Image (cartoon, rainbow over all chains, first blue to last red; front, side, top):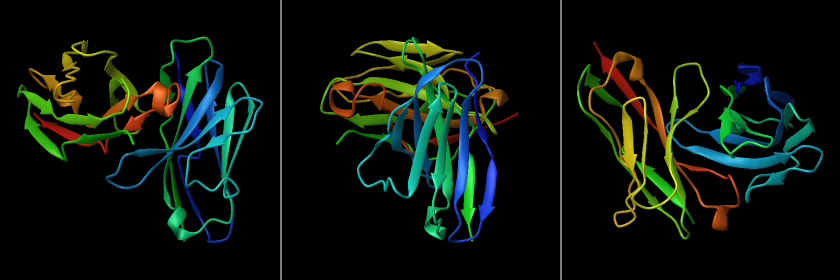
Length: 116
Length: 115
């Protein structure tokens, strides 16, 4: 149990377009989901915390108008990269906290975004 | 702010060798410490954790001891297998400073075990 999926696994888009990444908890309900960004050979950096039914909380330095997060249900959170630019190319990873669980984060496999 | 530093990889070992991956941390409060593992094509999985000084976390033959005096949480395994090939992340959670459940990660260490 406790499986988290992400879709798509890889996406290539042109500069100036928007891309949506989905994060789903497949077999549990998640009141809280986290979005991370990982640059090559670097650690995962927390971008934002997403709570079901409320606005996301963004970490310092993360542009909330550029990285739109929607947590519309207990099993789905989406990250939309708006007006993407090459510097947004990265590996995006989500994680989910099981509702009523001990606080362990379950991670998705990540989405590789390349902006050309 | 809080931070985690891991030994740089990649690390390549032969099967049955002894493994150590170093991890040190900087924290203002009293963090919990974690090791996560990421197998190819999969998400990060919690490998082990320790919530207070001198605690030892263990799982699948891996161990790590929370050393407050040296601010370290080194990962060890006595005899590695090919199936242990993965990327390993050290992380901390400092609820007082970071907020509940927020994780701060090291940069990851890629481990390759050759038969």
